[in-house]
Length: 135
Image 1: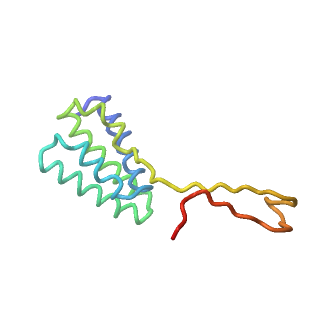
Image 2 (image 1 turned 90 degrees about the vertical axis):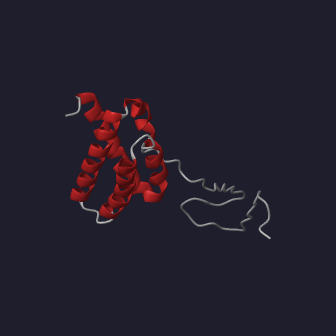
Image 3 (image 1 turned 90 degrees about the horizontal axis):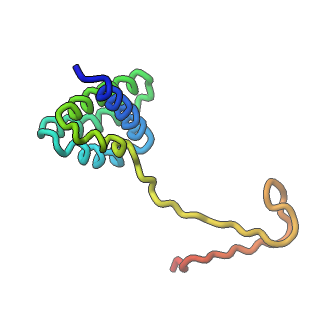
């Protein structure tokens, strides 16, 4: 049986990890899981890699039971790993963190008279693009 601190950390990490897989997908999380379980034996590494795929497949059903079952599986995997590798405890916070993909930001500048937001626009509109040309 694991101590209370280890169980609490594993449970929190499992919930975060399942939520990250649900929102970001297995591909985004796969490398984080592989990095976290890098000290594990090959069987544990395979189990963690398979759990990523199994979690993503289970979450596709959108059932609350699937979410709970996935969290339970991850809690057990993480608790066992942390029990054997206490030095990995400081890395648990990085397990479910996903860096968002870069997005383009567009700015809109309105000049002239008339209502531009939430109403009709009367008159012309000029679009200025400050980026590089497409062609």
